[in-house]
Length: 107
Length: 113
Image 1 (cartoon, rainbow over the protein chains, first blue to last red):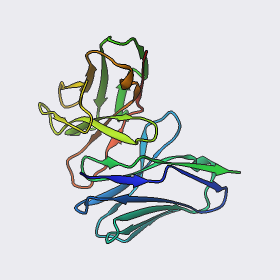
Image 2 (cartoon, rainbow over the protein chains, first blue to last red):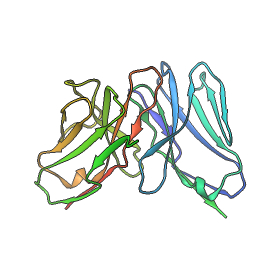
Image 3 (tube, helix red, strand yellow):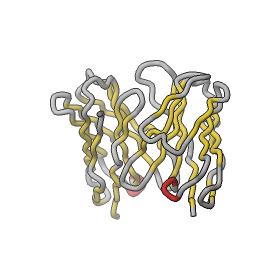
Image 4 (tube, rainbow over the protein chains, first blue to last red):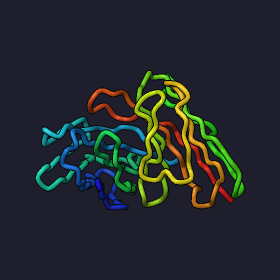
């Protein structure tokens, strides 16, 4: 069946760039999403990319999509302590979620 | 805008008790979803409803029932709670337009002793 994989943890220093990676199996996905979950809260949509795009930039966020390898990444430039959260990638209309990557930003 | 509202926010149950988790959305969305979130496992789909009057099983439906009461409300029921159902439960909704994301509630934290 469809599957989405992410690494579980990432730790960076404040001011560095963070790159969170995701691989997926469903090549028919039209859209791929990144959600952010802060402690004790629900999921907020961070950004998304249409499957016919390779890259999308939105302020400090850059999403890269490699359809051939079914690989999606989220780059956060100038990472701040407020970016500490769990980041989920998701694909498909019913949204198959990855396990989530916990980003820890150290001052 | 309220968006997606879940009640209660927290609940502790004893094994064998029953419980209904409530979810309502005010965005006129057709589709609604129930997920559970467990550490290291992401979100797993329990049930979803593509429109009023229809429901379908997701990845982990066993031990749960749902009701799509009307377009706004989608409830999740645990008939006989088990410790394995201790989790955080999220409700979400979305419009039918292609590519539109889901909107999530803040979750219900459920502990079963």
